[in-house]
Amino acid sequence: MSRRSKSKRVLAQPDPIYNSRLVNLLVIRVLKSGKKSVAQKIVYTALEIIAEKTNENPILLLEKAVTNVTPQVEIKARRVGGSTYQVPIEIRAYRGTNISLKWLIEFARERSGRGMASKLANEIIDAAKNAGGSIRRKEQTHKMAEANKAFAHFRY
Image 1: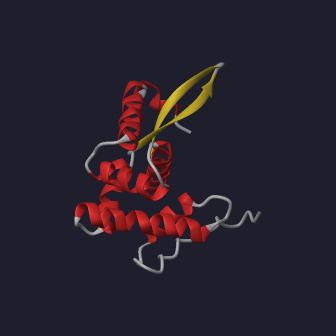
Image 2: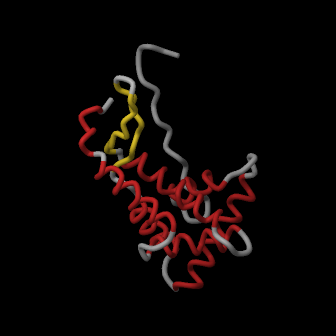
């Protein structure tokens, strides 16, 4: 690894159908065992389901859902003098987007129902309406950060 400079972050390419970087990031998160075509099929079918159910632009709804789920702080465990503290740390926008996409996929997988596409569509619709498991996770994280803000001076 070079000591001279930091590596540059490579931005995700926009997806071929909707020309959106966010959709491509979602496809990457859905991806399992390197089967990108299957992941794309799941995401595009989910976006079609969203368009049918809500009669709105699915990309705008996805952006709204990601915005609603994105946390402002996260909790990191920090070991100081033999005891471990839960330290709240503010996060950047890119990390927040990644966390929100991860939560959307995680709670979509946990949902009951048939087919990942319909489960993902329902989770995105719920997140856009400020409901669902991913929104609860965000609120839980913020509540925990608020409870542990006394340890904020232990930041890295």
